[in-house]
Amino acid sequence: MDAAHRDGPDRYPVDVRSLALQYSVQRFPDSPIKRVEADDLDGFEGALLPGETRKNVWGILYDSKQTAERARFTVAHELGHYLLHRDKQPKGFWCGEDVIVRREVEGIEKEADTFAAFLLMPLHDFRALIPPDHKPTLEELGDCARRYGVSLTAAILRWLEYTNRRSMLVVSNEGFARWAKASGPAFRSGKFIRTRASVFELPGASLVATMGADVDPTVVVRQSAGVWFDEPVEESCIASSRYEMQLTLLHLGAQSARSWHSEAPDEEDSFDRFKR
Image (cartoon, rainbow, N blue to C red; front, side, top):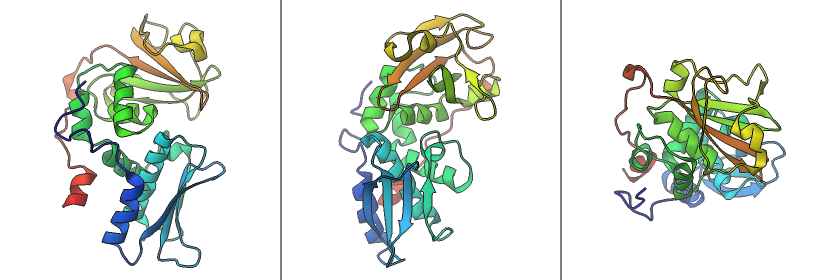
């Protein structure tokens, strides 16, 4: 994987804290962001709030228990709210795990997530690192996470948004899937895992169930049909000791219809808009 391509090695990771403070003052001097700070948010991941005494200034808070990588995405998400939505919701925003970590939302929260993803992990750059037809390993996706300064979860979700492959991320602990995200081609072929209205117990023969926290992320196991789905899958896993979760990456076979997922053209990213 060649990190030194057209964007250069110094553009990433984006210093989103400085960007929020400096850009808001330059672009909106009458209502700037004056604070970007960590705090104990007690169950929330981040917040965009107006000032207590000066309602025309804003502050971004992120939970102090977050890693630096997760905090970067949280701040970018709240910056998205500031730029796109603060006039619609002048009392501010409180954002939880389902919004920022799982990205299972619609409406303005999805818009803020999309902004954060484009700002931190521009599509043209990510696609140059991992082309849409490539089947990445956890190590390759980890390289992307380090390049952009985001969590591995955020990097995998970003890749799932544009890949042509049928693949899936499963986030689990204590033998059960907490949530899962399928790529578009996987979902359209009927391969996904429901976790909202039902409990999904990890397959007993799966790598993540048998290895748990001791799983080796460099190991890739080809599971036979009937373990995860009614067809074989390639499974690899990594454990997060900080959040006591396991991330499982599943790759299914080649899709049978190319029309399921057409490759989109490069889109203008947020940095391009700022520069213009």
